[in-house]
Amino acid sequence: MTDGHAYPSGLERWVIAVSVMTATFMEVLDTTVVNVSLPHIAGSLSATVDEATWVLTSYLVANAIVLPLSGWLANYVGRKRLLMAAVTGFTLSSLACGLTPNLTVLVLSRIVQGMMGGSLQPLSQAVLLESFPPEERGQAMGFWGLGIVVAPILGPVLGGWLTDSYSWRWVFYINLPVGIVSLLMISLFVHDPAYIKRGAGRIDRWGIGLLALGVGALQYMLDTGQEKDWMGSLEIRWLAGIAAVALVALVIRELRAEHPVIDLHIFRLRTYSTGVFLMTSLGFMLYGSLVLVPIMLQTLFGYPALEAGIAMAPRGIGSFIAMPIIGYLTGRLDARKIVAVGLVLGGLTLFWLGVLDLNAGFWDVFWPQFYQGIALAMLFVPLTTVTMDPIRREGMGNATALFNLMRNLGGSTGIAVSTTLLVRYQQAGLNMLGAHVTPYNPAARAAFEGARAGFLAAGADPATATHRAQAAIFGLVARQGAMLSFVHVFQLLGILFVALVPLVLLMKRPTTRKVAAAGH
Image (cartoon, rainbow, N blue to C red; front, side, top):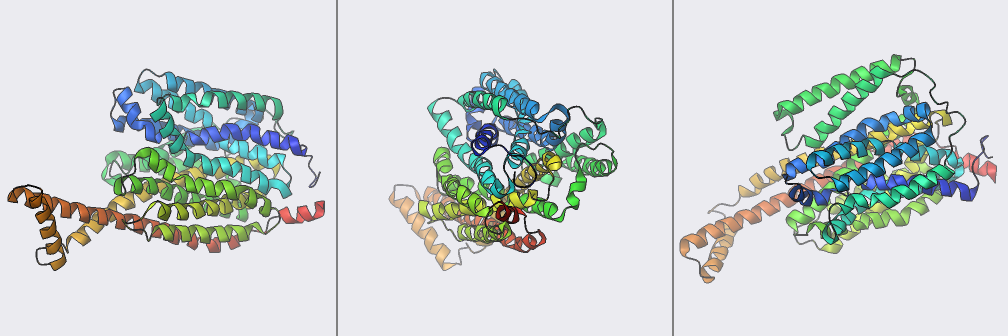
């Protein structure tokens, strides 16, 4: 007993950590593991690739709706009971996804899977924070961070390997043994804290309805906005309006409700509200850059899908190596300083990616991603520890639910904004470079004549050689314009990383070091 609360023994708390993180790793993995399998799913189920994207969108929307409800649900039905129900439902719906006969059943199964998985992240985080004393929470969050950071990176690699080696259905079947093991461990080792009173309080039906409507509309808008041309689409304008009205109404309702489904008063804590904003921004930049690298590798450097996924591994390797070390240091150093250094390092790695050109090789992409993985470890672990430091145990479930919701929404926004900027910058880059490719530009003229001579030497007639040379020059300009667009987005994300550093000063120094000193 170090701070007035009794904690499990050393071995027991790590068994609890493995129990909850097994299921969480499985759930987070499923957010990205299906991505590379979409063409195979579409072909197998006689659907278009656009229709198959509902396999992703349905999961993310259902997940986003349930995630903020997890704290209230845990208090209402019991945390252990909710965890076991979520793992059971997730595992069974994974089996249904693998056995699906058509796309409709697959999408419905993914909705159930997303709903079941939505509570696993915040519940596992709450369990870990309550199972470890303050001086060891950095280590616990380092372990938790392995699942949250590494799983999305491993997802495309594992999904590509399973799809190529076996079948896309094994992307879902792989969850079955993991779910069964996790369910057994949770039933044996996880217990409800004394403050949870099942069934206490009334159900805030209006809050639940507004939450589902607002978050669901927002998530769907972010997931489909780019392909529907954002505000050029009537559907997106309706979704934006519905999300705005529902979320504003939700805030008003929850601030006035006697038994709110989410307690927004927690944002009065400056450290928590700052930490949530930083984590939202981190999700924005992490997932924004995460989606750009494989697109760049496949479209500009000719990497197949599986090799592009493997090329993402350095980020996971860096995080995997650094997470335990940062977790250990978080309980012994001022965690805010680690966060500040992590933001600077993260920004530098994005600037590094922002100076690549079309001659870049594998190692030019490897090293910035590796150091970015280290930076993410320096951010996720101490930032979570500092943010949750002022939260009382009774409010931990609500706090972790909001924390994870905002990180996920930040990630969805980052993906949407990054891909939109990529398209806009690519068009601008093509126009800018194309303006210099004229018959009056000596370099452009020389390149055209060289290409035309090559085609003539290969046996093409003069007219065909001319057309092919023009197409080749246009293709070269288009590739250069696309490369410029990636460079601009990487640099912009890097600037945002560094710009967040002053916000760390708004957070209070955590009590972890004080408690650790008192305990020794």
